[in-house]
Length: 352
Image (cartoon, rainbow, N blue to C red; front, side, top):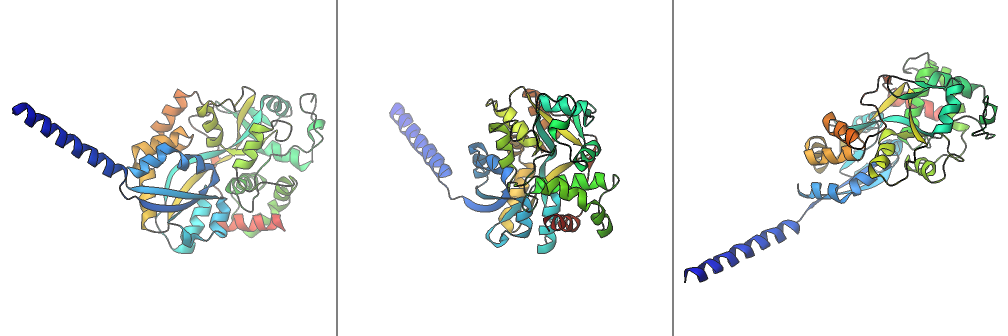
């Protein structure tokens, strides 16, 4: 009798447990929609990230767009949050919509993905040097080279890459993408005598240099994933140097998918900009996404596993050590970008 009672109780408990699990897995999730910089798509599409949000009752759906595009042209009324890749773009959204709250759960420095033969060439030319524990692209020397219109095949002793085209970094389209705007921020700072450009007179002084760097590239793609994929797939012939977010390069090393071969090298412009990926909540559900990305340990760990530098630096340091990432623990020569209005005026001048 007791045995039958025990079996019956076990069946009841097991049935209840199955019902709880079934209900939990199939409970109604609140859908939250956001527009984000394209370099974060892989993070938001990862099943582990989706599960982490689902554990808090959220289904997060995102559309990609260039960060400058998010701030100027995207219809934000369709979304619960905007998540551009730079603080100037986020600041504009906040000002336009009178939103005080913002979240910066992670960041990524601007870097240059290139190849060992290119590093050797530019080192001999005095453009690349060893920084405090990591190789750097001396932006002052690079701008001087670009000003003179030097071609690759004019570099002394160049037998590794004798291409008949100008020595120029490949960037995205500055009209839509934040990474190109951050490149403009770096170049304008150097061209303005190592000072942040904040007024129309300084903007006018640096305009010719910026026009040469950006317009002379020819066709540029609209988001940072495009030129980086060219760098990985096509190689040195098409893209000897490409401006990237550090996280893009680090993510591929972490994946260990073979795309980062031993001859691929990551340089850091000196100076550089640390691009703060800033989430702006447009509606209440967007606030919850921002809070979770900033404070939830699992989401923070996952962000670090995609190469982003998180607010809890222990997470990124752990990933860096585990995967032997070719990135420094700290960067020394980091500047702030100009205000959004100055960036806009400089970009408009280059476009014209």
